[in-house]
Image 1: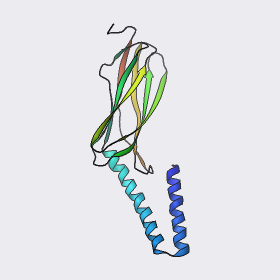
Image 2 (image 1 turned 180 degrees about the vertical axis):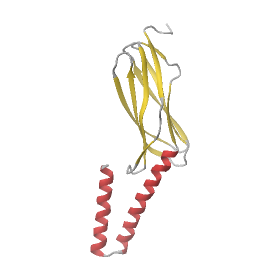
Image 3 (image 1 turned 60 degrees about the horizontal axis):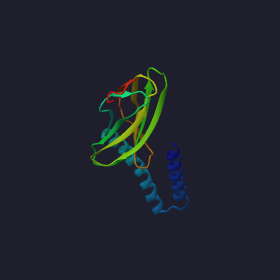
Image 4 (image 1 turned 120 degrees about the vertical axis):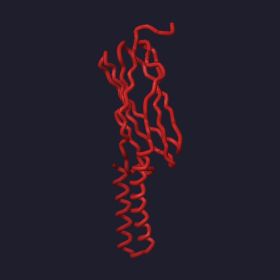
Length: 165
């Protein structure tokens, strides 16, 4: 939001200078600023359509008080790189009743997939539920942000003993 305010202040300063000095250079600068905002608006929609985010865990079983890893996959199928994918990952322990949120902010190259390893540890036995609460992508100037629809849940069973002992 603060970036939009600063951008509008910049546009208003350009409008003021164009009115005061009646310069064609200032008029061209104003046209460029307005066109850039329109391009960034369309860019945010393009990036939203070509991004996909999901969670994965090879073996959804872990021992109590043992660290386990999950993977957050971000796939960009578009021709342009994505500079900001903002993700809120929520971890909820159904037995202990505690929940935790983690924020992941990453970028992905064009026609590429990125995997982020996330470590977690369970203090109680039972089910741990990891869910993507918010996935958001923004344009290169961070003026416009679009929510990516993602309803993904990963359930991990936490046991009191290790399966590999």
